[in-house]
Amino acid sequence: MNIFVAGLSYQINDADLKELFDEYGTVSSAKIITDRDSGRSKGFGFVEMDDEAEAQRAIEELNDAEYDGRTLAVSVARPRTERPQGGGNRGGGNRSRDRY
Image (cartoon, rainbow, N blue to C red):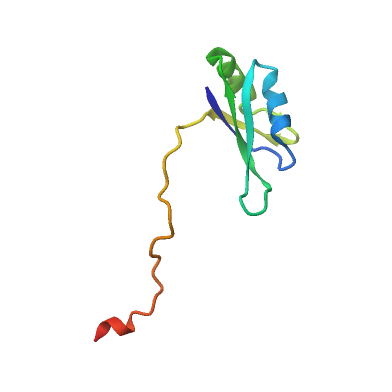
C-alpha cells in the first residue's frame, strides 16, 4: 500500500521517514519528495508497505500525530495522474502583426 505523508519537517530524510514507519511493520520504501532545482525537501513524502493491515494501522496512528514538532497528515496515496508535458502556449506574444 502506498501512503502519503505531509507536514514533515524539512530536515527529515528518507531514512528518518522509514524509521518512523518501521514501528508499524515492514517498509518496502520511503521517499521524501524534493525540489528538482534546489534539492530541498518539499515537506511531504511517500511510504510503501506491503502488508495492508500494517499500513492501515500506521495511517490511523500517525495521522494528526506530532513528529519533529509538526503535525502529520497521513493517508492512502491517490494514484498518480499524468500531467501534460511541455510548455504549451501561455500567451503574452505580440499579436499586433496578426491584425493586418
